[in-house]
Image 1: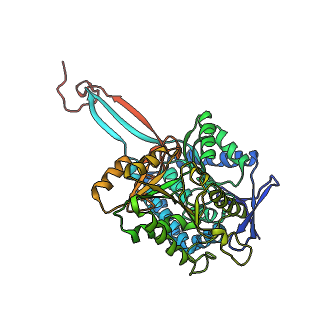
Image 2 (image 1 turned 90 degrees about the horizontal axis):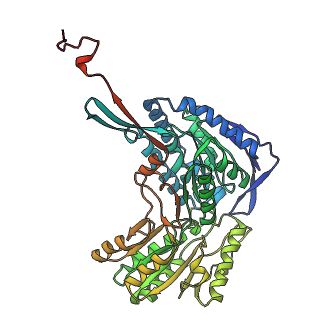
Length: 495
């Protein structure tokens, strides 16, 4: 069992609180690590280190920051396999999912490598006679990121590259469930040559989170997690005068029109609902079958589910791994029972699948004839459970999405260009897929939902990331008329 400590000024800092948290291998159920949990004093020391580093880092040239970012990108890329192995070992996702996570993380570092372009200000010469006005983008100071268990490498890299590229220093509080991948990334950050204290890592629970939300030297907080916690983070940090971007939960709908390519739609539903065991905020939770396609869609999904291989993420044959904890696995299982009790049709029951060993496994589940008043529709299950809702018309499907409190992502499957174009206008969500089930934007666009899927100032990464991590300073300057200058500029002098 390995000990996992905080990282401060580029060096491990052994926890002094005496409190720890276990880290497990979800595929075996065995404890593999022990994580230090910070107290308030330790958080204060880590923030103080970042505050000190900011004074130097904010003045480092754009050219030097760019070179460091390119080195960091190369180190993450060359160590992608190691990062993926750590992801699989503590989260449980299969290796292909882990490698995909690292690839999407690298996109965000690459975007930040263009910081010289992103940080350009604006200039108006002679806005008034002899007056120039220009805007520069200035860093905020110490900023913090509180990141979730489901993407422990990618989500920190939604935040860190843009934040430090803008001249801020960063304090990362990763999930307690799978901290090894973000710790390794932080070590690569030091290896790239960034000054000590530009990136510090603090491990902790609510004690550490609350201190970051309240600390006067933390100027902004980025968060990704569940809706109740996102609301709490937003309210608490805002009340303490901080900028906040808090990305929250989801109940993503995939609309399947009668003219859709059935094979494409069924393949998409299976990959989007059961990939990473459904532990994704962009997972498809609800398939809305419009018109008469419902029975065919359910049958096509069921056939594909029978062929899905579930096992350890390290097994090359596995297409879905375990859930992250035993408690979460049991919670997902209870939802299946609730769906059956409330009158839905459990077509495939993941509780019936048997696994050897003590891993946190559950089979994939398909629930048909779900209605909007059922618990399995109203709650975010965050597991490998796909609900099918029947709708008579396109408009009824759109109204379902609009009435849902979440608005993270949605998708439509159709061959009709007019319907697709109308849907991208009608869909009440921040990210929309057209024959794409998981419409996560590339690194040079920004990620974020609407309604109860986002609280705070901006969406995350891409252009909005640079906007969030900077504040504009506008300078208005006037100089004497050249003819009145005391320096001989060649103008005629009055006698």
